[in-house]
Length: 339
Image (cartoon, rainbow, N blue to C red; front, side, top):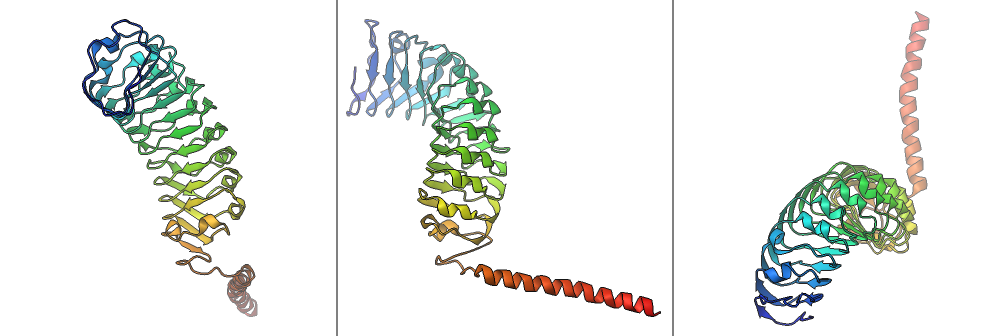
């Protein structure tokens, strides 16, 4: 039954799945309201369900059951509340579970990863709390893990590093902390990594440079410090790089000039200094603002001192410092020996 993207209103009929043979039930992007009928909860024949983009209500833990044949279910962008039930882990064929944009609270049940074959888990934009379960590391077939815009805390469990088929990882908009684990460099198929708006600290791991398929990297609005690792320039497919609103310092690696795929860069509000790379992506003054002392041929930045001149100036300063130390020392020794 496919009734998606219409202007259907009202409630779902109570007699859904009366014949116990309903497999495909698709009513997404309508104006349907109310609770999920109990007949759908008991419908063991379901294979594919789309209820997203409506105004369904009710406790999500009580509205749905165990479905031995279910492969895909999208409950996103409704008004469900309550906690995610551990019974989803008893759906052995479940490959896609999407419950984004609801009012879901509580923790992510680790059982989700134990009894399913999930390839996509989308729980963003809810009110989930707690730590990311280390059991998610057992989802070795997963390609999309999206937990953004919740209230998750703690670090990224190292077990996540075993998810080598990941293509999209979005943990943005939480309260995650500690360092970014080096194991994220194992995600060789990853093309989008968003860890923005958290509390990650310490340095950006150089291992991220192994992500040769990555096209979007957003680490903005964290507490990251140290230098920008030059290995990031090894990301041959990178198009968007956002490192703004951190505590990064030092010079921007000159190797960034060779990143031909780079289209958009934002490194604003750090403690960076020195010349900006000669790359078309580094031409937006706003994306460079709020740093210590960047220079370059961009309006709003000071021109850079040519290297030879800088070297000569630096050498003169060094000579003055040497003379200011040696001459007084020689004078003191001369006085000592003449006494």
